[in-house]
Structures are given as structure tokens and as C-alpha cells.
Amino acid sequence: MDSKNYIDSGILELYVYGALSEKESMEVSQTLQQHPEIRAEVEAIERSLTQLSTAAAPYQPDQVYQQIKTKLNFKDKEVAVIPITRKRTNWPAYIGWAASVALLIGLFIQFDKNKELRQEVVQSQIEKNLLEGKIQVAEEDLTKTKTILSVLRNKDVIEVPLQAQQVAPEAYAAVYWDKESQTAYIDVAGLPTPPPGKVYQVWSLKLDPLTPTSLGTLDSFNEEATKVFALNNANESEAFGITLEPEGGSESPTMEQLYTLGVVAS
Image (cartoon, rainbow, N blue to C red; front, side):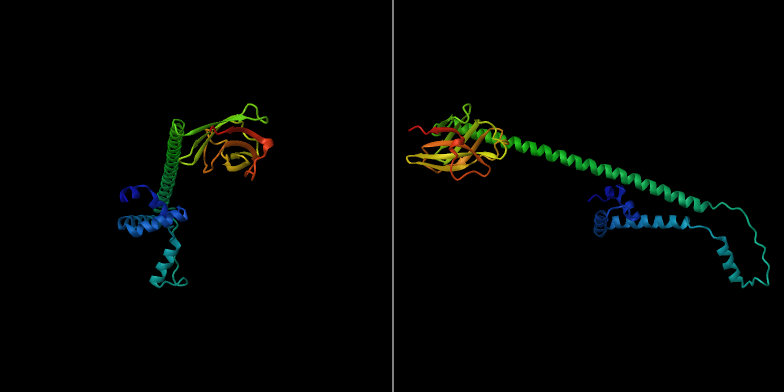
């Protein structure tokens, strides 16, 4: 820790005056235990405030007068003392109070400056985190795009076009099946956005007898910019189909909601 910068920050004056939060006060207390030079500065500030308080203590002439009488052993009935009243300006008190007020004003000004500085630091950190997040997202998108391109350009990947069915005559999709990695890449850019409460479900099909096996649901359809999804497929698929199902998917395809269907070329 840079002790000089810490002392110049004004936080020690706020600590002595009790203007810090409980958490900040605990942090300062821990710092005092670890850094003797900072503890010495706090003690110096406390002495200064004590001197100001002493200088600002009200002058009480009547009390002083009674103390003098006691010291001289005067008795009121034996000695008639005519008090002399004189208008007096109590300059030490005024100076002490003025100094205290000036110190308080300085402390609060410093407190406001430190508060603004902390807010600027927090704002800068937020902007930094947002920038790092955007960079990370961009890198992830780039990696995903490179993966998709490598799949499309791989001559060993089986391409299966999925044709539109009656429920959605304008729909289309495609499956890129990498048997070696047992992964099916589902391109659904040609499907309409599913309505609320519905989700697309992808099926691997055996044709004789017709046996559907779910490969999964496309839950993040709206969020996925590329509209390409990678699903595990260890089946000996003869065809692929996509249906519209309730959220969470179905155990078997709803044939009335079959959007696309395609057969693997033999």
C-alpha cells in the first residue's frame, strides 16, 4: 500500500470524525494495525481536534471568580466585593469554533470528492467488464462460425435436406451428419419462430418399421444467431424430421406438427 496516497486521500480525517460507514471504518482500523505510519497520522489528527476543542471551550468568568475566592478563603459576609463587568470578546472561542467549522467543511468536501472518485472507478470497471464480455462473445461466435464452416466443407459429412410439410409449406431445414464424431448439425434458418409455449424437436428416424428417436429440443432458437444447433446422434439414422412440440419436448413426434422431413441418401 502507498501510505502517502492513503493519507492524502482524506479518509483518515473522515475516520476520526466518524463520517465513514461501518464497513469503511473496519477497513481503516485494519489498516492502522498493519501500518504504523498511518496510525501515527490518525493520532496526530486526533490531537489536532483535541486542541481545537480546548481552544473552543467557553470562557466562564463566574466559575474562575469563585475558585479565586476559595483559594483566598474569602467569606461573602465579611468582604464586600464589587464585581466589575466588562464587555469582552472571546476571540479564542471564536477562532476555535471557526477552525472546527472550516475543518468540517474541508472533510465533507474531501468526502464528496472521494465518493465521486469511487463512483468513477466503479463505472470504469463496469465498462471494462462489458467490453470484455463483448470480446468474449465475439470470440465465441467466431469459433462457432469456424466450426460450422469446417463441417460444411468436410467431404465425409452427410448432408440431408429436410423438405417442407403441409403444416408449413414455406419451411426448410438441413442436417449435416458427422458419423465419425456422432454429431448432427441442424440448420433451421428456414423455420419460422416458434410460438410461445412451443419448441422445435429433432428426430432421428428408422423407416422400417418407423421408429423415431429424439435428438433433443431447440430451446434457444430465438437466441441463437446462426440458427445452427449441434446435437449428439449415435443412431443409424435413415431419415430426420423436425416437429413443433410443447415446451420440454414430447416422447413421440406430433405428426400433425411435422414441419420438415428428409431421408438419408443411400
